[in-house]
Length: 292
Image (cartoon, rainbow, N blue to C red; front, side, top):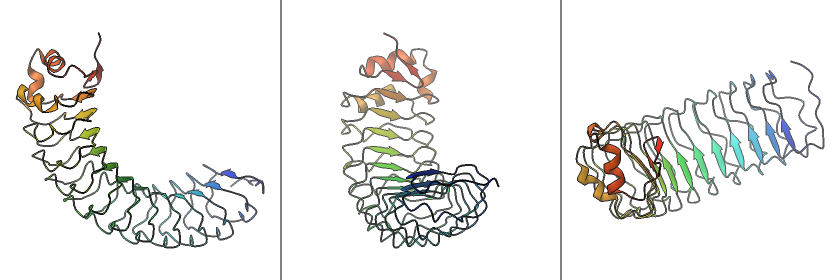
């Protein structure tokens, strides 16, 4: 590793891709508010105790196996330990000012030890090995929850998340749309690449602007006529065959984008024209904008 010169007055410290194998010698960074150690060879979180002013710590893409030695960083608002080798969420109890936590692409099997992070607004746990949505009850400030590419089979234990506006559970094992009745502020729902057969259970999610249920096993567009704020509707790669189903979307006067490709409907030679006639507000069909 080349010698790295550190400026004690620097507030934003960027040590990306420096072949750092061990965190050491950073004590001089007393004024640092952000520290990025992305894309290095770090195996252990250590020797950060003196950096008590840190607001953001980025350890993305290293070789870290354990969340540890962070308890002194009580001012931390954002922590990213994505693309590492973590098996467990732990050691975050003192980080009560944390607003954003990114643990994407690790080997985490359980959602646990987050109950003290009551100010958390964004939680990213995509691409892990999680099977059950649990232990989120105290995270009442949560605005965005990302659980894509896990092994989750049921939508459950979300009732306490009244402030949630974005929920992403793409590429899991969900077969039934349920458990969302208390999420009255939800604006974006991403459920593509699951095994859902029926659109249901969205009665209380009247604020939805984006609904993505592409690549499921849905035969009918139904139970969404009350979603009048809908702007984006992603329904490609399903089994929709009746043009009358589009009537469900007519109350969404601000609907701009619909994806319906790779449904039986698309075989109709008048496919695009029929969508334009049924849904005059739409500006984009599949990946193509409408030319006027």
